Length: 344
Image (spheres, rainbow, N blue to C red):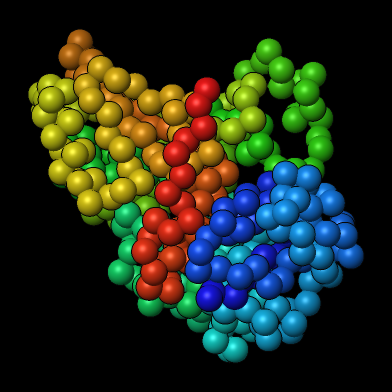
């Protein structure tokens, strides 16, 4: 059995990890930390877990977690995982960080967008945790930087096009996210009265996920990719729908585009390419680790419009983290994640 610890177990991504891992046949949840709810059972905080995980929450103790666990998931604010990972790796414990600490190749980019200051960033052997790109490296990784939710939807949507040189390197991205993407802590922006019957843009042209998208898309393309990104908060709990506008380098019809996608993702269980004329919807991936991709060609402007849908808490966070864990420990990638989406 894989012995698992979760730091930050009572945030949305933490409790989603517990939901998935509680039914994972190869996992034993050994350690759960919470700053706000220590000494309480996790099922006392989230009644949905009664009978599935009733483990007591503890104050964060890296020493105890390292002695009991084979892998630690860090679902903490940026800046914390870097310190944890350095000590865990010395003890042979793997780390999967759901924050941003290990997503960037260049520390100066991380520091510019997230702040913080820690030494020996390049000294930690880290892998960007998008299995569809880095599966072989993830197998050998000590530390995985789990991708952001928006970047997951965007990179999966654009990767086949950039890899095959079908589009130009300037892309416009319009994304809508459910309110759970704003996190568990209450704020003015995620109050019911602010979100219900309302949709609004935020962090326009300055969202922290922009450099992450550009880093990974540029590596796929082989040259610089520029992303114009506008995120929106939508009146729903879960889900991300990203719509990407790409200038085609040559005339292509939807059937040709469909063949490019199906060939690229033919061996990827969690990426579903929809038939031409069928467009993704967040409801169709709700509660699952799947990404649905659809597209349309606007011949009038020679623009390819790509749409991708994921559940921001699963494929956009905790589900992808479990997918990475499965790869790191050499077990079937789908274990614990072969979940039919909830509908309606």
